[in-house]
Image (cartoon, rainbow, N blue to C red; front, side, top):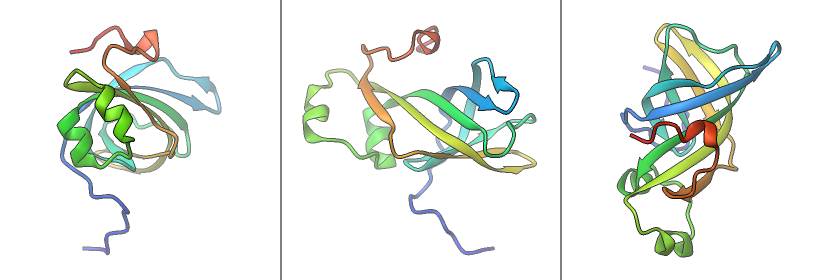
Length: 130
């Protein structure tokens, strides 16, 4: 096996993720995927129809506070104290970094946003919070 080059450890969490992309042909509709694994730096999404390489993507997903801590997202102590619920919204942008026969790897930009569950960031993503 090759040398591991990831900065963050990845975890086999299956997280429902809503994603839209900016491709050369325009913006894609919102599509729901399930991650095969995820880290604070990116995610691997299983799909038979990956987006084109270097597509700019916008993602939103729900994580439990425990998963958020496991994934080592960078948070302020004030934001942790402010959350009363057990889940949080994570919104991130990134790019499609590579394809495999099983799906696509996405690397997150560092400007992800984490908000309390009751703070809906994008109404398009708020349709299904299960």
